Image (cartoon, rainbow, N blue to C red; front, side):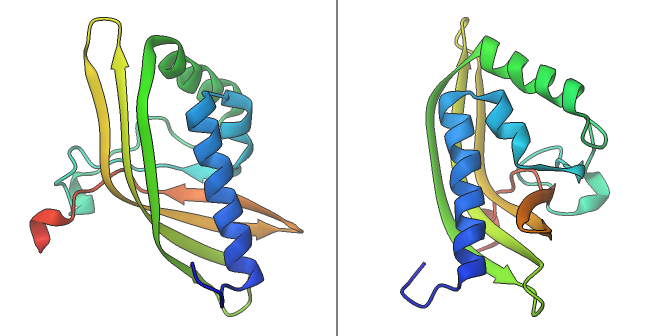
Length: 149
């Protein structure tokens, strides 16, 4: 983001960076601290499933204990090889109380047997402001848009 980045855009960038730190350090507490209590996270079946008719919601609405256990399971069973994230766009509502970020990610996890879980493509992170705090309320799964170019 450039020199004309608004305060709200900087706050959203801070949220993205906080989430990235959580992945990088496998800190479940930090990770789940970014989620709104009404968070939902739909996932495409594949990175090429651009039509949401094929998407799924595997974990249901955010639940502190369940989501912490599931993310901890990932961290316990996979080693993070790399986690590259590039912010492509941030949009903020006129009121400054909602926004989204388009982020390209390339995150590679590998388990003890060499099985890979590769998150590579573009995501949309939707944020809402509650009082003075931003929370992630919706997040799309990773999609590969290179096939559409």
